[in-house]
Length: 139
Image (cartoon, rainbow, N blue to C red; front, side, top):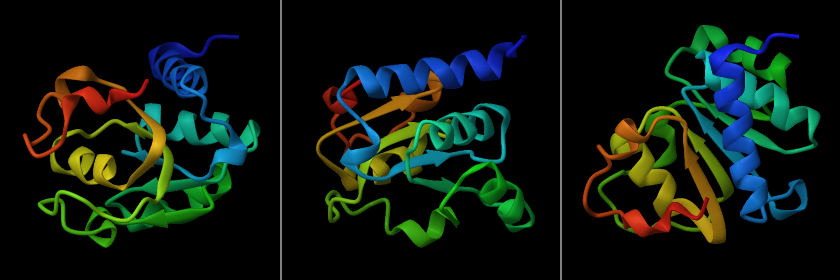
């Protein structure tokens, strides 16, 4: 079976989270860019592995599709909070990010203690504002 580049990337992200100790029992995993190839495959794989998933997508027309893939919840980026605020309450055990920038900074500020994140594309992660700590890669 062929999985393509998106499937391979999603799989590598999930493996990195699991190597960092993230498991379904640790809590919810958030996936950004959920409507894209990497995000959609990551949701499907995480769901098959028993994770609870929040999908982040700007496209409301994809909500039913993302839930069919296995997302428990679908949210818009602006619903997650103010990305300029350096700390938020812990919310995510893990994150797979395909967007980067301010959204990644927001997710990092909401990641639980000993949580982990994995960018699907490091150039996008490098656009993360300086208020987030680059050493918090965790995975």
